[in-house]
Image 1 (cartoon, helix red, strand yellow):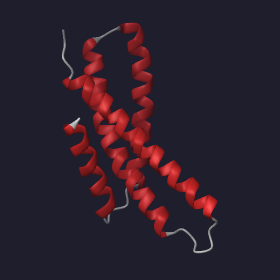
Image 2 (cartoon, helix red, strand yellow):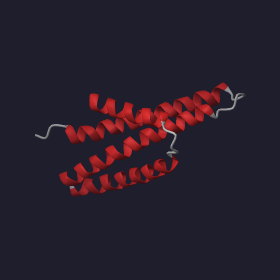
Image 3 (cartoon, helix red, strand yellow):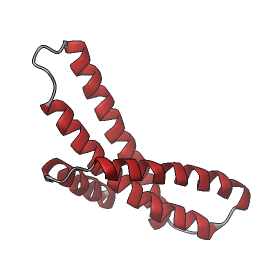
Image 4 (cartoon, helix red, strand yellow):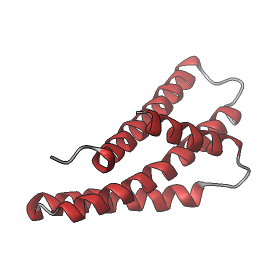
Length: 120
């Protein structure tokens, strides 16, 4: 858990402070996420431990990128929110942003658990 927390914090901090636009990175990481889902479904039938490790390593890279992208997207959304926005729209954006970052963290944790988990 400390490795996952530090990784998540570092990527989120990078997404918050970088001047580089991460929009293209986000679409690339989303394609990687689709690839992970397809590979995981195929691995259900193959039961390959080597393929599971590859999926886990690629998953860590994908969710690190998605964390930085989602953090930057939330920062930009908060900076461009119109002054006359309704409270409901602000709350919905905050809830959806928190949910995306929460899912990034949970999936990063699961991928790291596959890598560092004990093999008996």
